[in-house]
Image 1 (cartoon, rainbow, N blue to C red):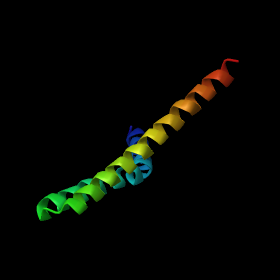
Image 2 (image 1 turned 90 degrees about the horizontal axis):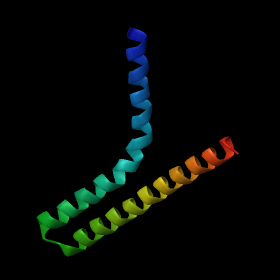
Image 3 (image 1 turned 30 degrees about the horizontal axis):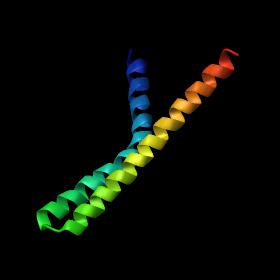
Image 4 (image 1 turned 90 degrees about the vertical axis):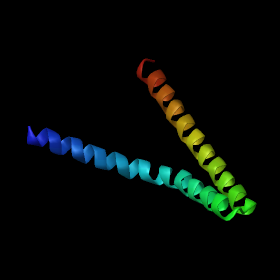
Length: 79
């Protein structure tokens, strides 16, 4: 029983290592937008919005690559 719990914890830690870099850019975008709102500075708000759009493009690219690789595996497995 303890071995299963240990395996689950290590799996969660390895997933965090993969996800953490992808969540850093949206978090930075939110912080920059918040700074712009606090300082009432439209330049920071625009920069934060731009960072948010960049992070959205990265997520779309990753999802596209995942779908494309899943389709490739399915086609080559059952062909």
